[in-house]
Image 1 (spheres, one colour):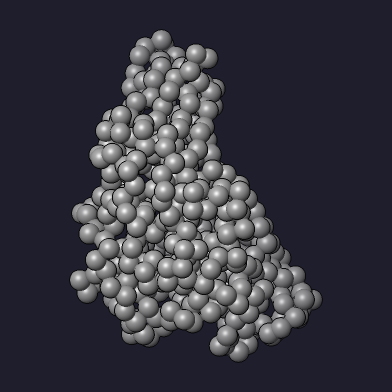
Image 2: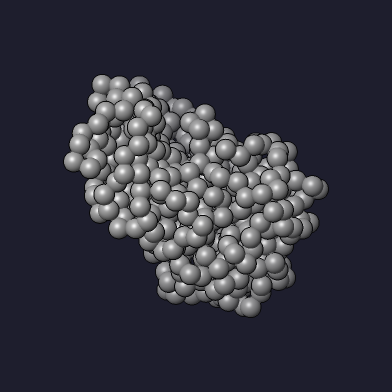
Amino acid sequence: MLQPGIIPDKEPLIRVGIILPEDRYTSVSIVIPQSPAYQIDFSGRHVALEAGAELYFKYSRDSIHFSASGKSFTAPNDIHISPVQDEKQIKPGQGLLVKNVISGRDFHWKKYINAVYSGKLIIQRHKDRLMMINELPIEHYLMCVATSEMGAACPEALIEAQTITARSWMLANVEQKHVALGMDVCNDDCCQRYQGTTYLTAQSIEGALNTYGQVLIYKDKICDARYSKSCGGVMEAYENIWPGPALPYLQIKADAAEEPPEWNKPLSDENNFSAWVNSVPQTFCSPLTIPENELKQYLGSVDEDGQYFRWQEKITQPELISSLKQFRGLDVTSVLNISILERGGSGRAKKAAVDYTDSNGSSRQDILQDEYSIRRALHKKFLYSSAFTVTKMEDDSFNLKGAGWGHGAGLCQIGALGMSLKNYNSREIVLHYYPGSILKRIY
């Protein structure tokens, strides 16, 4: 696993969580490819696997039961499925097929996909559930991230920029959300979207090879290179989204060559933000650069069709009450008002208040203290961003008008796409989104 604060001088192996305890899996099916040859290792035993065979793993009474080569086996824990020979190169669709993997865990785009993974798969017990980890070289992982996050039709510069960003974020190794489970990262939007070789392309392989070992550096440290789908025209500062000190390379900045005239500062002011969210400025992520109806060809396979730059969402009283009960544990019978108490530099809400009545008819207020809580609490499918205005309608529903998809800090994927379509190269793209950083090859 990666070590915090250590800049590696050779390509590391990483561990990616494919099935997490919260997914509540008690069984999983894996199909062995025709080639290369695979073997399974458990409890000191080694079994060659038949090409094309489907293995079914099931948790039962503190053990994992499975069949292989016509025989049934029981393992107390830690089953390793790996190629007989190390994979020097990987190809699209190469590896072990895992059925019904969650994509979009806890987000509004959640779905189940069949995904193919190169490298080693490790199946473990975690209490009364199964867990799965994919162990592989980081550069093989990055080849897959580029076209899991974005589509294969993206220009070369975008693929390279996405790869540099993903590599930097990974090796900065700041969040460590899943380290207690023996994972460097998980396979989903909570960390970085990774769907193995399922959507791997020759272009994403080339993007990793062209940028091999390159990371963004700021003052001798690898940049914590956050990114999101669309900033909505203005990037957000790190400290307005996450706890901790400011990061100078994650700052409030227009996603444009020049600041658009529609950006009246500060967007933390309600009047300024209202005017901004009702405008369509000329920015790299704007539909004036990439029309919304052309975006789908460039987006990741699990992304939804939608309005990424500006959006509207109507939330009814029953929907809002249900969300607040589920995600905030509130005793709420009606929502009286939603008010934004504090905004960041991109207009994203940092603090909001929900005024409501409880089952005793008493008036109460719940304070949402951060961008994530606001997006999570106000909609059962998770709001696209926290950059929105709120209008209460005559039928007591709430109309939200918003900007961008995601937290908005660092690289804006649709903006980076816009830059690549305008013939900016990958170096120019990453230095636009992480000002003050330098690009350096570390291995």
